[in-house]
Length: 132
Image (cartoon, rainbow, N blue to C red; front, side):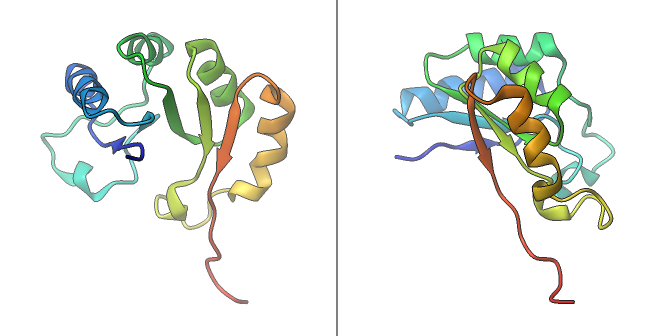
């Protein structure tokens, strides 16, 4: 089985879902640093915020499986992920769907690599927006 990438912003729900995934013997669990890019958050009842360093640590400590944090777009985020004890930082702008004019993964990857290379596994995704 692969690794589930869990989408909720409520810390207690995240821990519950991490534990459920662990019971299913996944190889790792993952979650975004924030959830701004998901259409799921457009509801006024959904709280959107960036996870604090304490929340990152709590999530890592809640399971035995490796934890991956996605949405890393700079060295500051990457260092916080390293400090949390996570197994990987996933450099991603979530497909650029949050802001069309935001930085691309290829632009920030060297900065992230310089900051955390050798300390944590670095993953990345990217895409082409246009052919022009």
